[in-house]
Length: 454
Image (cartoon, rainbow, N blue to C red):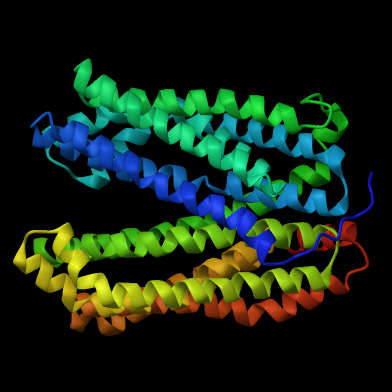
């Protein structure tokens, strides 16, 4: 075991991780654009609706298991901070095992899973048939997609953001090129779009393994006793389950928001869809900073380095606030023009402009929601994060219930309240968690204390 590391924490270190993550995030929506355009050229509304429905299902399903990336990143950064470089390969292999098991379970359960999910979605017969075709093919990508979460988390956890960026871009490019070729050139229809997703995740996994082997000290050969260390496995299970519950609560908020918008009518649903694109843009930048928080806070947590941890927190939140203010001003100045570009319907344009002030406001509380998420993940304060997210969900629902008479404005108020609650509750809990974490005598004892708290 090497000596614990106390790395310098500054703006340069923040953007060495956040910058590549932001670029990678910006390439991801292009997959949806290419898939929609390719299927749209087939001039069949049922196929277009089917790929849209199936994409929503996979977005939620895969998002639910994003704990694989977050926990792998945190455990890797903490091991690096403690100087336990021998533990890095064990973290990677454990992650691959869990990813494989979850992916295999989804494949085994694909028939009942499809029946339940498509019944809940309630699409027309043609749309549902097309969506099932896509689902039954793409579900086979699950083990590879989840393993890619592990690869990305492992690389970013070591502050190797550039290889992670390159892998993500390659996966996205393969998906887009394969979709165009299979759907438009070889005329495979919606099945071609699903095969493209499966192909991109599979190739991405193979490349990811090659890259990880280059950085793995001693390769993937991990002693059985270390790989299946009971304390490490129990801690991984506890952290992963808490992050999964937290993510489920987050997904519930956005599904509820979409469902209520749909019930308000086609114009309101379309306006909310246009405005959600603004939220996605701000989220791309804030999520990049959250990645930096996960790595830097994880590494300084493992060291342990209280000053470095505090500096990481301060820098991520300050830079996030700066980005949020710039984005808010840009939305205020250019929002109406961008709305006109995104929709030709005057009714939708008018409705979207009416609710634009909520979009201008959202990035400010979003800084603290995303920033503290990254900080809590890095420190594996997963139990606290889970509980505070559930409390934020309750605040969201309570606000919507109190303001539902205001229609869509009340719904947007509830979403802003949710952002404020996420960041505010985590910010209020932060000082106590910080003191408890860095007053413990050693990282080993801190890990045991955390496990007992579960």
